[in-house]
Amino acid sequence: RLLPHVLGAIAPSAAARAEPLNAHGKLARDLAEQGAVAALRPFYAPHADAALFGLEFEAPDVRLEDATYYAAANLVRLTRDVTEPEVARAKLAFRKALAADLASPAAACAALGRSVQLLGAPQSPAELLADVDAVTVDDVKRLCYDHVHDCDHALAAIGPVHELPDYNWLRTACYDYAF
Image (cartoon, rainbow, N blue to C red; front, side):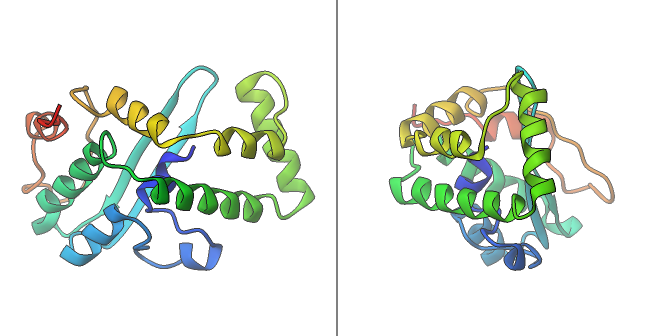
């Protein structure tokens, strides 16, 4: 749940989430500096025994290769170069987003229901925050190495995609030659 926040592409407040591109992390900064995307939305969909993580972005058709390059490069960077300040900032952003999401009793009840559905038992916000606080830089590196470095990925696109790299390009871009 913390990885989208480590990438810095999720803004910590509801007001900042309304911005088209939030440059809170290296990935978002790289994409914004290059003008490669108009919007960036990482997603995380947990399930009982697995999860789906990905990046959704809107890019001009002539910038698709650049946007894909920076996304892949930053995911690979997390396998070796994520820093303690990045993880600390991500934890703070996660705390703020969770507080905003649980602002009403109905939202808190829905969150408990989701945890029962996913985990089979209720997990309170305090337990969730304790789990997030236990995440270390090495945990992030290990997770990214296991699921990004030299792994099969899925790529889907709609619209004019003539400049979108092919699957082999993406697979090669996610192989970190530093290892």
